[in-house]
Length: 401
Image (cartoon, rainbow, N blue to C red; front, side):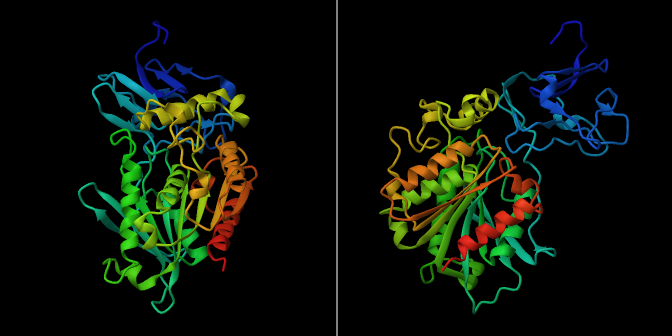
């Protein structure tokens, strides 16, 4: 920062800095930032937008990773991105999270909460339940409001995304998109809420999510569980694992862990749906070779959540690294891998699919690439045509006989 400038009143990490004198300083090249008519910069004084508009920064696809915009809420105060002048920043994880040297963590995204209940648009009913009180692991359970106990439905155990460090099962983006998936597929769905890094470094999220799978599996036994919706509406002969981004990563690991595990005798996983799976590696592949900005960004996100000496080649994030379990042990009969054309993770998802097809795994794999879209676009815009088409594809996959 130039010493001649006055103190900073607002900063969007790695993107924009606003000084007290009104001077706006771009921190990345202007070609990476663009404005739409309804997302315009108006004169800023003392950290407040002076016109009746919303301030937002949007990134072009060359830097996006499921990032659509960063709007500021009425009355247009910039406080949600305001730097705490009294604290020193230890780590800035653009554009989601800031870690201070005193150990406090400031989340800049993925903190919104929606309440469970009846969604009148889709006719889907949801409720929250605590699974492990000691750790706070919980789940939001969904079912069609029209479901009858005499007609059992498939069960999907869903793990949400967010890089292991943002978002939750009550995030409005996930709540809205899962309502649509449940309505389209006519299923019961358990959306798992696990602890997040960096407060709870990995493998905490894996441990929590595995505990949720054990809790669900207990209901497959007589008198094994007390959750009425699982006991009354679920066909435990049709159970699926699904997730997007880091949630798809966990679904992969659990399907491997289930093989020859006692839990595998309690619950029979028919298939896995992996939506924009979060796999990574130290050495770049595909578009990562030329897209160094996003490669570095994702590297940084993984190193935040996983304190491993192996870094981005830890078997948790790189299923092909030394020490990774054999893919042929995947404990399911069918697999669906979905990637998005503009997603920096696309080539990793495609590689995973190809490795599965060429392995000794005895199941059937399907692959879907969605053109013109980026990472987890379906939660940002669940009513767009591509999202609707994806939900239909997932419903068809789940309901195959």
